[in-house]
Amino acid sequence: EVQLLESGGGLVQPGGSLRLSCEASGFPFSRYAMTWVRQAPGKGLEWVSSISNSGGTTYYADSVKGRFTISRDSSKNTLYLQINSLRAEDTGVYYCARGAPYDYWNFWGQGTLVTVSS
Amino acid sequence: QSALTQPASVSGSPGQSITISCTGSSSDVGSYHLVSWYQQHPGKAPKLIIYEVNQRPSGVSNRFSGSKSGNTASLTISGLQAEDEADYYCCSYAGRNAVFGTGTKVTVL
Image (cartoon, rainbow over the protein chains, first blue to last red):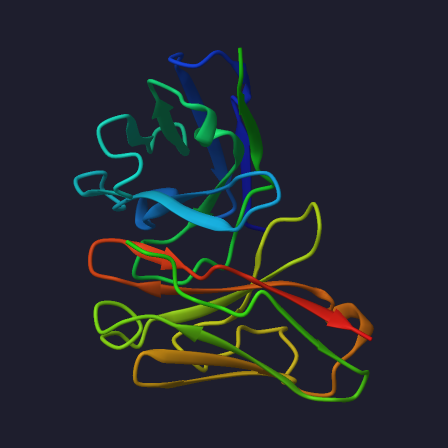
């Protein structure tokens, strides 16, 4: 059974940093691209970033380019999202999903909540 | 990377059919056969219901169907049921990125 488990969310002050993790199981992690999608409270879904199966290619939404860094560790079956220079508008639930931006995302985690507030 | 445009809300009575539109541009919906649709119930993760414009994942009811014409994709829910009440989002590949629709709240009257 495919499982994706996010962690690392929490309350952080504006300008702060956070690293989100997504532990994958039930499938050959190194064979799949992975993606982060976020959702602000009461708002719609927003694609944030994706990474190829090898980690050699990364993709970012314009809204996070330069502040967010996606990475993966296939030895740990884990996807990461390093978030720097946090802003209030980064508040929301962050989901990881299996697949590239040109894929469809059939498997999602339960999400981890990031709250940016002073 | 502007969001695709969806109606904010659509409603229908049980048993009826409804259609949700998703309008993009020649840079996204119009250029790729890579439109997917997601259903999201409150407090839950999104669930894939349509991929590659009109394909249904295993286990998804055949009451859900998708189509595309030009820069606009559509999701049709036939035989509307109470459990279909949820938010629905389209998503399209847009060349090195993906873009979601603004979301549509479906209400079953």
